[in-house]
Length: 373
Image (cartoon, rainbow, N blue to C red):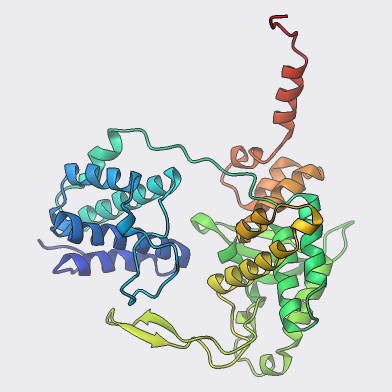
């Protein structure tokens, strides 16, 4: 069929649809993963192309996600070219299953809109059952005691550029609530100073978050000082920059590692982002830096009577949860905390508040006991 994607086959159509999300790296990664899994399943289980999938096939895929066969799972990270590589690292949770189905429905809707397909087989499926409700896991944040352990582990690291950068990342995340991608995309051009009546001069970081919404985040003076020290290691190179506003806040300390990527024609090729240090540390790079550090913190957690497993599981998003919860505990008005976090509504922010839960606990504890003697 004639279509606005200019696609002659399913692979071209899918790649053209994914191409719409090039400016949203995290969305692109998530969408590509789920679409590739579905394409593999179509080829290996259905023995048919994506464009021939029916609504009953979609129901079968839903059942497949509910109990992924062991032959499709490999917990250990492997290169995609390794014969042992598998599409899944573990059995997907209910929330992950929901996300996969929503993404696939979005894919087929996009192919229908572009004229590549005449119908969306996922549409009737999504109406025929209740998707598992998304639930925010608020245990994925640090307590005061755990955060003190994090700071002790940080102070015990050898002094140098690595520790300084790590401190910048930790302090910025836990005092601002910025998302991982927002931090990776932050540039010097996004910083400005504001002087308002009766308030001290303050540095403001402007970030662009979900739904392309921008927001202003006041930065703590100590964090600004840390960022200046981190950037000071590259001052000589920065003075030669033709675009100083594009200098990243969080930098690489070594030449980047060669990685697989797609060329202009869609073919895979090995690419090196930068042969010199000082370029922007990617979202994946920031995530890896923190995961290594939290694993290090887990090694000494038990001796401080803390749960090592929680530090093993900790990630960048724990920092965001920690910021919001601590802001509410410290008396920050909920509407301000919501704006700083970039939430779409106060309802999302209110989930972090323990005041409502405390009210319920007190009410139940105050009820007259009616139990058998």
